[in-house]
Image 1 (cartoon, rainbow, N blue to C red):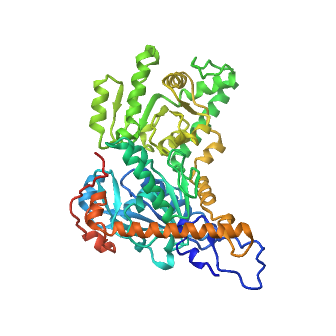
Image 2 (spheres, rainbow, N blue to C red):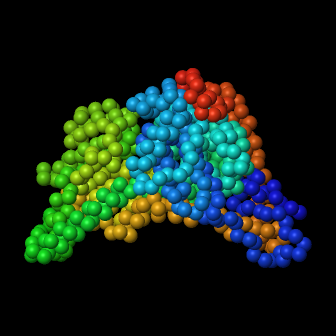
Image 3 (cartoon, one colour):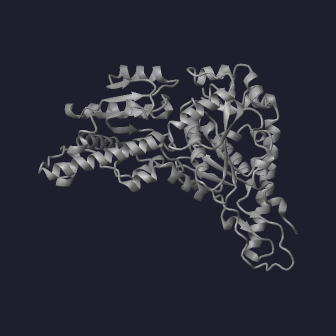
Amino acid sequence: MALSWLGRRGSGGNRVVTQEAPPAHHNSTSTPPPPPSLRDPGRRFTIVTTASLPWMTGTSVNPLLRAAYLAHRGDRCRVTLVVPWLAPCDQKLVHPNAIFDNPEQQRAHIRQWLMGRVDFEPTFDIHFYPGRYAIDKGSIVPVGDVTECVPEEEADVAVLEEPEHLTWFHHGVRWSDKFRHVVGIIHTNYLEYARREQNGERKEALLRNVNHAVARMHCHKIIKLSDAVQDFARSVTVNVHGVSPHFIEVGRKVAQAAEERGRHGLASGGGTTAGGGPGSSSSSSSDSTSSSNSRIFTKGGYFIGKVLWAKGYLELLERVKEYNAAAAPKDRLELDVFGDGDDFKDVKATAERGGLPLTFHGRADHAGEASRGYKFFINPSLSDVLATTTAEALAMGKFVVCAHHPSNAFFSTFSNCRTYSTPAEFAERIREVLHSEPEPIPPEDLHRLTWQAATERFLDAAEPHMEEICLPGSGGHHGWRIFKAHVEAVNDWFSVQLHKWLTASEALRCLVGAGAGTLVAPRGDRALAAWRPDLWSGGVMDRK
């Protein structure tokens, strides 16, 4: 019996992808042909994300850079980035200093920003889908069926950045029905945010099941940036993000300057003594490097990030308060803090009431002058999945002090990363970075942080593998896999139908937080420019 209905159509919920029954002359015990590689020439990638510049957030910046570097690989693939378009009423809330009259203006802004971050001419397309800024969620909700933004002839490989977010309220074609291969990349630990809200345990349990179900329904494979997030079906854990060339170049220059000054010091017999912190070395080589680096890093510590309590600011204030309460005057921790957000005034006021030596500078570009000269970066967040700012700080040759947490597993493999599990360990790490100097980052570690390396990791992780393919009639093992594929396909089909039925109701959509008027979308740049939705109203699942 042919089982093609378990192939491309409806295969989003299956780990096993089956093919048509082989011809009569085919040897049923032969090895099935390999699936098409994502590296094959002519593949079409559609990258869909939940945010866009000028909103400087991870889900706008990282997918943009992924699109640029994927298109730049030179294997004749086509790449399209699909990002949300916000009506003027929502633009004023998300990026009030840059209001666009039409998608073409925003498209030009995105390309101009990108040209300042990469050293080549980007060759990918940018399309828009309508979105609403959900005030109580602090994120953008898609309007209508986003798959309609992609013509049938271009529907090859879909990369869903935040697949759970994109499909919570999705009512339309199943992504894995339209695309040959669908890969989801998990960016955000939504369970951590839900846990911190009113009735957090109930919200967390419900959201965990919803996230797992919708991702399974729509994706063939899930890539988790770290194990800080929940489990998903058919998932692998790989850091597929990189940092812009600017940060790599800064790190390279810092390493070169340290090496040159170190050689100069040794040549003149000028070996000096390093700072006497716990992490300093007594060797002449380390002393020379320390002396040379001390001229490069002229400031102490800093933190940069969106100012929300859930983004690590609660932990930051607690750690600084605990540390300074017991620290000697010479080891007192003072930090500069960069960023803005909904909780800016509250966080700043709390720090001032506690007498904490934190100086808040407002929003700043990590690639700008604001971060120059700092020796160490502190990120105590426990809600991150993978902090881009941490990677950027490491690339610039700085110390990083962060929690011993799954989100920092990748970073902990770098020599300048210092992790802690307790307040006592935090204090030890701070004294170490205060009284010693970062090691020059070696070229191989710098390469691991590049987008070129991240793109290759992504293609490796996203590839369909041989174990995902089986042929009917090829023995007991394959027979069991065929049966399992049937069961999973039927289960996923019913899940999809239930989800479609629930999301078809405007009343129910409003109740659960999808917002009014998000079922049907305006289409085309002209319609988007003229779109004027009502003010947003939240639902029972929204932040309280």
